[in-house]
Image (cartoon, rainbow, N blue to C red; front, side):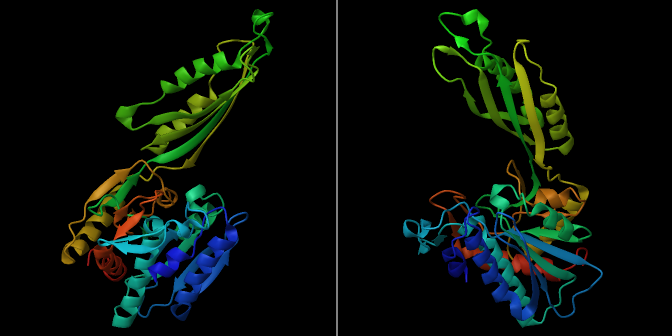
Length: 365
């Protein structure tokens, strides 16, 4: 099953390919689920599967969340085929995150065959644009998550130990544009107002917003400016990234960026800054959910640990709604977005069993 998924290449920027992957899952679950597709705009379709599991309690609801899209273009399989070597399985998107999706389907199919009743109704949401910011899927994710008892994120586990992710940094983006005045740098230098010089001052000021002790980083990522070496630069532009552990810290950084003023009054500054994902904060509900998962893991021979990461996921949106989130329930491996992307084969049954336990063992039971 996993090989079939990997060989259905599904890059974010190829909506037809991503939709084919979603349709494959829909066909797989059709004997035991009702499926619905949502439009993805310029991206592929999003898929919701409402599972028909006997004995599921209707007063509780579990939402599993994953994504069908990968960072790998169609044709990657020619140089990076699905293969098994030394206990590892390789292939584009196998770690991030087709492994996790396959484990969830295996868990559901196992509890159906064994006749084990889930403690809540269960649905699966697979989106098509997570790798590019979840621009079209966020409203669907939030709508499906509201009121859920627990959210299971099928993203890759953390490290070779397979740790779950109980905290993720939030993200923001900003764009700073400086407009100056062009002039000949030799004949009339003083008549010009250099946008590049102004931007250099702004970059230094932005650097002061980083507070590593609080986990706040404001990265000036891409800088462009000027036209020729002998022309005082008329324009400069900066694109950057914001990361934070507390959503309120991210909001404060956005306000500070929006208040930037030019040092040279002849220059004009335009700032666009906004949060893309709130932080997934380690709340009391998240800690309780992790302890529940840890107890199940110990019965399976897994010594689960919790971890935090600077990368964001769709779990960030869900956590902001007050729903307890367990993230990193997917594959154990390494090489996300890299040519050595792989998973550890021996961990596959344990991760599927862990998911099955979370579906069938109620917290506190």
